[in-house]
Amino acid sequence: MDVVLDNTDLQILELMQANARISNADLARELNMAPSAVLERVKKLEQKKVIQGYTTQINPATIQQKLLAFIFIRSSEGFTCSSNTAQSLAAIPEVQEVHHIAGEDCYLIKVRTADSSSLMQLMRTQLQKIPNIASTKTTIVLETVKEQQQLVIPKN
Amino acid sequence: MDVVLDNTDLQILELMQANARISNADLARELNMAPSAVLERVKKLEQKKVIQGYTTQINPATIQQKLLAFIFIRSSEGFTCSSNTAQSLAAIPEVQEVHHIAGEDCYLIKVRTADSSSLMQLMRTQLQKIPNIASTKTTIVLETVKEQQQLVIPKN
DNA sequence: CCCTGTCACAGAATATTATTCAGAAATACC
DNA sequence: GGTATTTCTGAATAATATTCTGTGACAGGG
Image 1 (cartoon, each protein chain N blue to C red):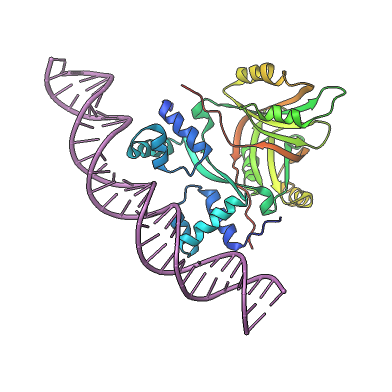
Image 2: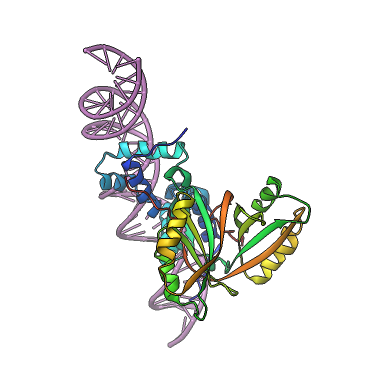
């Protein structure tokens, strides 16, 4: 069940990670291959779930999402973290990431809202409703220096 | 200098965020517009930097990146955080995100490596080399429940 | 050694798309 | 009202995606 990727696959991933909208023809030119062969590989990478999707990176500020925060979540006294909790957190649109973490806290979540007041509102109206959780440390981001979903593609 | 987006722009962003490789023709069909008009809008969204890029989401595990960690960085005693520090952090490929945060710590970084030993190695060989910093709390992610660069598109 | 299945690829043919452009609406702005 | 600017449509063309057929490489039996 282990996926094996050769050098060509990795090159494809590298190029498509940098620009998901690269044409199949350009991809083929870069790799010195026929477009049909490249397309076949891309389709397989999608089937094998190596490629999980293609997204457009939007400047958050331009759509009125100027606040970014990380919040540590723990279960309230006497309760343990259930996967239900994780699902409830994940269901909130403003919650972009939910990570189950090691240590005393249960989850670290990444939240994006318009401003601090809407974050407060979200915490009151959405987070507090989830059973048996207590948010702990909330970290407000002042400025994001780097943010990319770009993985390091290993060289073969 | 403020970017204004109408309903059509927001629809385009929503569709392209969900699938960056949607064809311009499909986009036009969804919006009941001519392909040329849609293309014009997309080009403008790129120019205005509302759209920052298109990326392919790769399953990290399939390219041997099984460990995810968040590390809080602070400046060592008697030093303040400089933007040089941020740049040094951002220059490390395994460091996916660098956020300047409020509070006593300076930065929160997100790091992805193959395993815990390569994280340790990275901390020793890369992080320690950066002048005047001290890493504080390191949070290891056991399991990622949700992770999407999907912003909440406001409805008009 | 040959047979056979599998795989990745090239090349060609066709369907579909991207891109460009001219001109018509729509809009905003004196 | 007049004028500029923006946004759109529709058509033409260039480029691309997609499909299909066939070939060569390779592996494992028998």
